[in-house]
Length: 293
Image 1: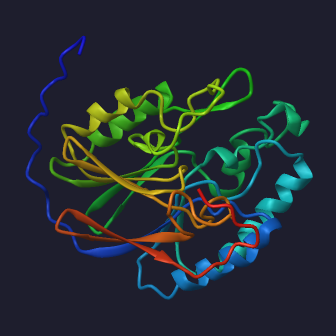
Image 2 (image 1 turned 90 degrees about the horizontal axis):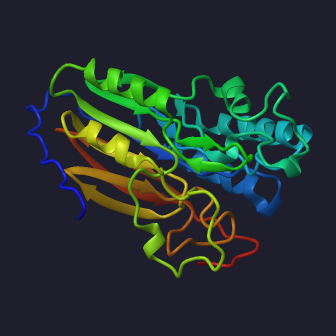
């Protein structure tokens, strides 16, 4: 190593909280093709049978707003919102890269369009990043999407959000249990599971490129878990005592079967005594056009 890594500061004793259960439902990629609407409908009907206080949608609500025209993007969001009525519980939303409108030039959209980029998400779901409290646990939902100057996306927590995040974490009483949610992972080993792409990617989109600026903020507070989407796999990586848990995907391999062995599904999260216990619920969807990875 060219520089020494700072030792992990000791964290304060964890404050007590009430036990509860919530759902982490990510990467629905709703679209009229590939029977995705029926798949989401089935997943949501199963989800609402599970006793849970609320759900967190981990991003990529639709497929795809990045590269389509306004008419298609509006149709996709309408389809998502109609289908999501099946959930019948409170839902907290996370922005995903596919939830940004018209960023790719092939969309024909212009940056001056009224719901260009993240405005598409904001108009439907509200703030891009925010926090809330539930039964003694503090939740932080991040915006991990960076829109680049050449109209692509990358994984990034921007400078303004980093300032907000530090303030938000510092404002919590010492020992508060904290759960962080991000669409693009802060920590993942997904790039190790397959051969590297033949053509190098222009932008780093598989994980947050500046995660090294975010992770140290978790060293001095009681982050009990980070929930992540985007890669459509089930994965847990522990770093500095924090579990980084990637929650699969309702859409599996983008509605083409399983993704590295992870089938279509969503995650049930039990929170008790400062520990996240997760289980993955499948819902029996059969892809109309499977090609598993």
